[in-house]
Amino acid sequence: MNFRNELPEWFSDIKSKYSQDKEMQDFISELEYLIIRDPLLVARLADKFGE
Image (tube, rainbow, N blue to C red; front, side, top):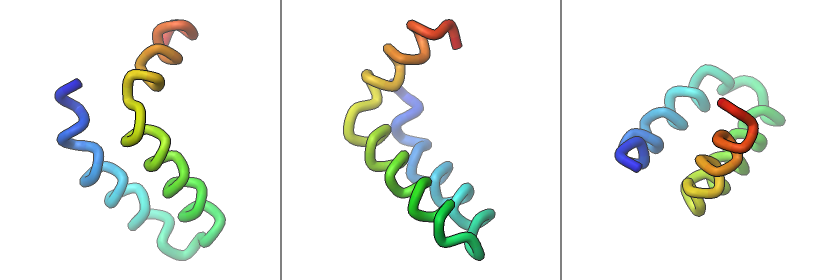
């Protein structure tokens, strides 16, 4: 769960790489919301699918 502290900066970096792509910006924002809201859900999904 320590990765939660790094998420805002990570998402900011990703968004800056796609600054000219509005659809990708929207997708990243939705993904950020999901992951920040429930990181355990993401960890469980990764575990289930062997990532």
